[in-house]
Every structure is written in structure tokens, then in C-alpha cells.
Length: 383
View (spheres, rainbow, N blue to C red):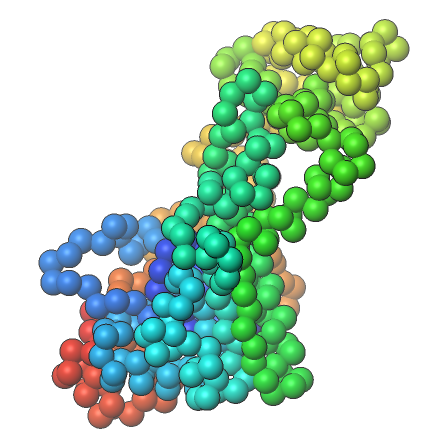
């Protein structure tokens, strides 16, 4: 393994969504991430074949039956050697298993215990089920998205799960780990997606209180209301995205589309925005997407093609940056961010549950007889 986190040990309790994504990001950065999976039932088919479970890349899987005391003891022994533990269950689940933070820190006082939830560890919704769209709804972020005359659309599960959840978990976990190296004491990191999304909404909360952001969708500067910050259909049924906020870039965009700025309303004259959106929309239907892109190239007009998920890997900029790479027979997003001296890499294909049970436990100091006993008792499976 390479990467700036080489030698950093993480236990991840198997789950779905933001916690596994956070674990994969730490694995990309070089951490030794051991995922604790459930033992699969004989003949059971996985929901997603391991090869395509990108959130589990750069990890090893140990399959344990956490209903057995021997398996719980194994997790505590791993915790004694770990720098951090990640769990994404509802509040108190880990405590009921006998693996709560207080118990784990008896084994390892410097352990960072990172807890991922949507609603948080306390409050009236703490035990309620939810998904990305529900957390976005509660924060006010979802209401800001979409067209004025339509219901707010779900923006994939990028904003709450990954932006407000996984990335805040990684920042919190690494921050607590740095502090633990100074103090010798671990701590809990309580990551709630509603907290993270609300933090991401900081500018819009400020704009609203300052009076420059309205409650109406598609009525503001970066929500599609401004004619210079939205998407437009082109002659071939494709789309371009324009983001010419600054006056100099807006002036360049007007030149690209053939408009004379001196004969138009002011860029920030909100009363003119609906008419200008219609005018831009008509103009963009006169050329194909790629014709507009070629016309704008090199002119700082903040215009880009709206690529499909299949087109994106072939774009020259994406290829120049090697944003994707072939790994384990499929195309993966490359690790990000990038480091000049300790580069990240893809070094382990996503594992089927239990693929690494024996090897990972041995690497973490379990003697062969303990590993044999776990397997003989059915507390561990080795795929």
C-alpha cells in the first residue's frame, strides 16, 4: 500500500452508504481498512457483485457472527490495535452488541470511534429510518433545488450521504486521530448528515438572512434563476451548462452567443431574468452542444458540455487527468485528492464478505489457533 495514511488502521463495521464510502476513501489514502461483514447464508446472492461494489475497494473483509461472544471478543482485539473504528448503525445498536465506544476504549484508550447517522445520536428522529432525500428535506436544502413550478428533485444521493456525511466523517476521524496522538486519548466523532448538510448550506443561510436569497426555487443566482447560471437545451437535444457569474465572464458569454451587452438589461437586474432566460434558451437551440463548446473554447465564457455518465470518461480533460483507471476488470474513479510524495492508488479489489478473514486477522496479530477456533465455532467464515 501507498498513500499518506499508510500504517493507519481502521475497523469498519459493515453497512451501506456513507460509512463504507468513508472507509473506501481512507483505504484509497493508504489506510489498512478491515471491514467486519456478516457471514453470508449458504447460497445467498449478494445485492451487488463484489467487483462493482466500489465503496468497498481498498479494504479487506473479515466475516464474523456478531451474535457469538467469540466474534465480539475478536472485534475488541482488533479495536485494541486500531487507530479508528467506523460504524453506521442506528444509535445504541453497537452498545447492544457489546461494542459501544466505552467498551472499545477499555481495550484501546486512544481509539477514535466515528459514528455515522442521518439524524444524529439524539433527538426525536434519532431512531427513525431515513435516506439522503429525507435528510436533505429537513435541512432546507431540498426545497432550494429544481424548477419553480415542480416538486424539488432528488439530487442523486451525493449531497447528504457523501457530502454531508462521508466527507465530514473522514475530516472528523482524521482530526480526532491527530489529537489522540498528542493527548493519548480517543474520542467519539458524532457525524449526522443533517449537521453536515446544514454546514454546507452556510452561504445560503447567510444570503437568506441578508435578503439576497428568496424562498422561491429557480429565482436566485445559483439555483437556475439567473440566466447566466443554468443549463440550456441545444439543437441536437443535448445540453450546455453556463456559469458566467462574474461580470467579465458574463461579457465573454454574451460575445459567444452573439449578444451586444450595451443593448441588454443589467446582468443582475432580476426583473429581466425571466425574459433573458427565454432569450438565451432560443439562441442555444440554434447550434449543437459540441458546436457551442467549440465556439466558447478559450474565451473564458464559463460554458461546458453536459456530458452523460458514459461520455464523461472520454473527455480530453478527464483523460489528461487520468480521472478514471482500469482496475479489477472495470473502470474505477481514480483516488482523490492527489499527493506529490505519497500517492494514493488502487491496490485491493472490493472483497466478497469474508474473503480476507484469515489473512487480515493474522496480519493484525491473531495467532493461528485463535483463528482456527473462530472458524471451528462458526464465529468466523473465510470465503
